[in-house]
Amino acid sequence: MTATNKNSWNFDNSYRKLAGYLYREQAPTPVREAKLVLWNEPLAEELGLSFLSGKEAEVAALFSGNEVPVGAAPIAQAYAGHQFGHFNMLGDGRAVLLGEQITPAGERFDIQLKGSGPTPYSRRGDGRATLSSMLREYLISEAMYHLGIPTSRSLAVVATGEPVYRSPVQSGAVLTRVAGSHIRVGTFEYVRQNDSKEDLQQFMDYVIQRHYPNLSNASQPALQLLSAVMNKQITLVVEWMRVGFIHGVMNTDNVSIAGETIDYGPCAFMNAYDPSTVFSSIDRNGRYAFGNQPRIAHWNMMAFAGTLLPLVSDDEEEATQQVTAILDMFPKRFALAWYTMMLQKIGIQQPLNEDQQLVDELLELMQHHHADYNNLFAALQYDDLPSEPIFNDPKFKDWHKRWQERIATAGKAEALALMAKRNPTYIARNHLVEEVLDAATQGNMEPFQQMLQQLTKPYQHQADEPALQQVPAGFDAAYQTFCGT
Image (cartoon, rainbow, N blue to C red; front, side):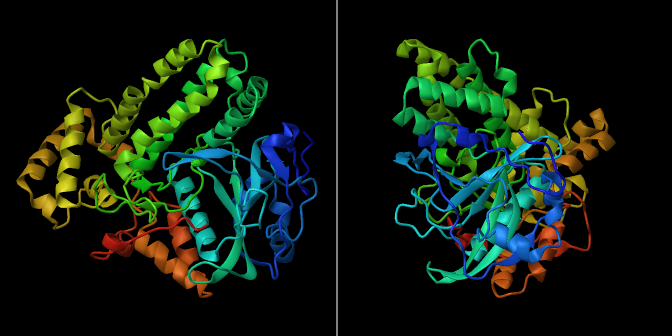
């Protein structure tokens, strides 16, 4: 690791020191006309890259792939994955990892160019990305960050001046994605499928050192890594569900070992509460529906556990029993974390056993009335119940009375303060996302910038911004999101 210099990059590139089967050297493909569209100045400062700010031409060249930063060692990473339950050999088909930037605070982050051209893993793809899909990832990932949810982030979007041949033909762009790492459950699947126990051991040791150093001297590192990653996934998915987020494509190649939200493809936010809500155009059977996300997270952890079996015990039956004992704790751990979160959304910090019934009854009423998920909790928090069917339902009125009595016993002011931290007033509403993306791809970035600014303060109530909370009637019925590949 090199010393930090405020006026230069500070790459370390530890991943390249691993076995060569895990990646291929791959420079980004230059683009015709690089033009900076977005630059995340606060993130640049955190990364130690603020020396680039104001140098628009240099930034455009660096983050389009036309130039490679000093100290970078670009690679495309290999991985596998269960995609909708089916195993495939994969890899970075349109992304290049420039390297690992060490920040002034000593933290390590991957700097990846997405849409940077074909790689050995492209499978006949062009390796490019559309401006619209890269702007979407920038917007949603930054929204998630400010909601307080673990996530990759976006440093820059650079237009390429080249067409991307999708349907219809669209403008191209490159996104710079920043993540704790891009190591996935699918990376472990790749190693397990192709390499020896010794290779798997070396890779696990690297991951533990990078992301879970507290396990470096663990007596059973593979089992404790499984438990730690499982806990991170539980925390992550519970946080998604707190704000109504639907990832849309929870394949194992999209499950970060670091516990971050990555790969913002067909993602969206649920408006009317319904656990079966799906917006992804490719999820025809609802595998990754809002309410299925806990079950799929459990499934993904089973896949992860399968990769670790050789490191648990040489006796496969014994190894299976030991990982199963950990996996069997998932439902109970998830239920505890989920109910804790939901109770906090209604202002209850120290729950009683009967408090879970308040959550169950409220969600049943919300689903029956198709109540807006985020707006309802905001209405409770601000004691401003609009004239909507759910609020006139006698069952809700009874629930509301019992809830008010419950939070009064613990202190109403404390309850409302807790709700203010757990219930956003503003999320990235689907119709507004589409509106600002349409404007941006036509050359008008002002609506996008306005929405982005609003999403940096999601818990700040502003009575004069009702349009940010209202959804056009019938919009979600036909709404679809796409992978953006």
